[in-house]
Each structure stands twice: as C-alpha cells, then as structure tokens.
Image (cartoon, rainbow, N blue to C red; front, side, top):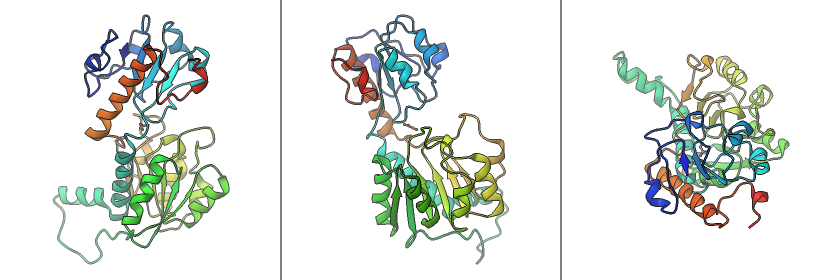
Length: 303
Ligand code: GLV
C-alpha cells in the first residue's frame, strides 16, 4: 500500500496485513511509485486519471482522504476494476461549523476588523464602523441538502434562522438564490453544479445577501462573483474552496467584502483522525476481500 501523504494516524499499525509506504509529508501522486501498489491512499489534491491508473497495474483500491471525489476519474477507475472510497460522515460537523464561521465572518466583517486592529490605525469605537448584518430572523438557503447541508440547517435553528433548501432541481435552486439572505453551498462538483453560482443567479440575490462556499470552487463562476461584489450587488461572500487550488483567482485578492479561507472545512483534529481511520479501514477491507463501507463506484464490486 502506498500513500501520497503522511496521515495523522500510524497507517502501518492500522493496516498490519500490508506493507505500507508513507512519505513524511504530502509528496503528490506524481512522486508516488505506483508500480507494485495494490492500494493507494490519496488526498483531494491528487488528480487520479487514466494515465495515473496506467502506472498502477496492480491497484485494487483508491482510498481518497476526503468526502468529495471529483479529483478522481471514477469511470476510468471502474474500467480498471479499482474500488474508490471516500470519508463521509466524520467531517460533517467540522464542515458545518466552518460554514457558520464563514457566515459570521462575512456578516460581521471579522477579517476586516482583524486587519484594522493589526494596522494600528483603529481610532476607537464608532457608531458607524464595520456595520454588518444580523443573522437572527433571516433565511438561510442551503444548496445541496445532504449530510453537510442538513448539519448546517440544524445549526441555523439555534441562530434563529429559517431554512430553505434545494438539491438538484434548477428551479428550486433559483428560488433559494432569490429568497435567501445567506446562500451556503454543500453540493458535490459535477457537470450539473459547475458554475451553479453564475451572473444570472447572483443578479437575483438581495443586495444584503451573503454567499458562502465550503463545497468546491468550481461551483462558482469567479468572474461573476467578483463583479457582483464590486458592484455591491450582494453584501459579502466567503470562500473556503477555489477552482484551481492552490491557485487563487487574482481578482479575489482586492475584491471588497470577500473572506478567503485556505480549504479548511474538515481541518479539525477530530475529523482528520477519523478520515485517516476510514482510509485505513477501506484499504484493509478491500485487501481482505471485503466490500468497503464507503465504496463510491459500487458497480466495480463483484464480491
Ligand atoms: C474536502 O473538501 C472534502 O471533500 O473532504
């Protein structure tokens, strides 16, 4: 078994039946020798396509240490007879918490306030300084009502917010954009959700609305979002994910009322340890001939 990265558990101890090769840090799929590997643990920054699979003739399982798996060409893996697994559930609460952290940061100018204090230019309390938007009494629009979307909705109740949601139906998605005070994305990146946040939908949002994206960068049309923020078409946005990570669209750096985070949705000790454990379990299961619990290309399994 090879891994493209170190993980926060001892993989060798967790998979005693396999010879385990783990680098000291993330080295990436390009620098991982796949020749004799029957199992691979990888991260969402590792793009796994047919060319990578061709380097791994013995591969039986790819354990992606993430819930999203848009970094993997699933059809190519299935054609190659390789199981692909992900790490759902264990990062649901962490990601829902970050969505709320970003929601508050955007609504209350937290990052801007931090910059102001550190600039040593803050002149003291003012009646009209960094005026934000109250979330209590507002409508939260959840796009993608799966595990994470529902965890966000549960928290919304505690903050006095009403929840509306939409998953696949484009008309429902339109309605959420037009009605919500905060729109938060929790959908996977698929051809149907690419640029789901576009100029047309942004134009229907309230001028007081906030957009939060902890899903995938590709769900947002960057140019349309920057234009909407620059024109004051919406109040603010907060992004944890970007289309071509680790590249950041250069227009984001100077964009007003935009909070940026470096893809930390699942970045808690609790979540990351459990994600690593699920990867180890998936590898152990497949190597022992057991169907892994979180197989995402079920059709590959012949028992
Ligand atoms: C993080 O973005 C994940 O998909 O786990």
